Length: 249
Image (tube, rainbow, N blue to C red; front, side, top):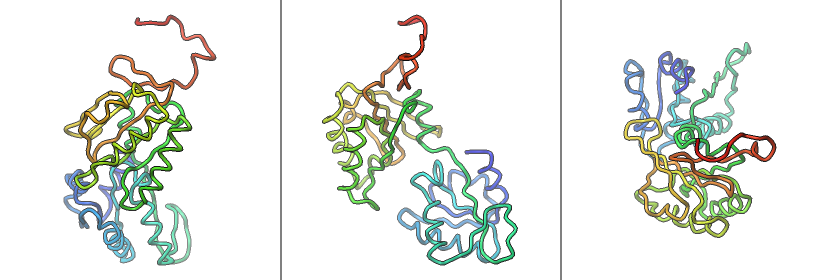
């Protein structure tokens, strides 16, 4: 959590969020009005949060990671635009009604899980969510195919749930058309939270490991390698500069 996120959570009147994420910050918000809903109730949650703000209360909509990365910031903006609500940035002095809306930066799984693995994203990368609840699977497959062919490092969000248990295997099959089975891959579950799991494996061995919705999967590009228990994607410095002695030191 960023310092600004902590400041906002402790200062607002109300907090809205998915019940699992509310539980993660409950110690900070015990004195707040809480708007909690279950999975697939995102629209209801944001509707109530916007209504709360229009009543004159300050309301934070919480997300896991960063609110702008596969999270709630977009839906908040969509709903405000559909309702034609005037939006002000923090610090703007406008003589009109409407809402002041601030998107507070967070720490996306790309960064938290990537840091635990080492340096898998030092060069160009793509992020793809394997959840087909809001995006047709055919479109997801095209994105995986394009990213694989272009040799991007790939971060896979939402790789598996209780009802979606085949998408990661299908993504692996697509990637194997373009990448060696020994391509380094990383699996991080509950990044920087209790029960954290960090594992470096290979693209070919992905199917041997359990993953869930709290997992981020990283697939290296053609230059990615492992050193001890870390996953490293070089940016190209060794091709331009001398990095000194090679081999173990």
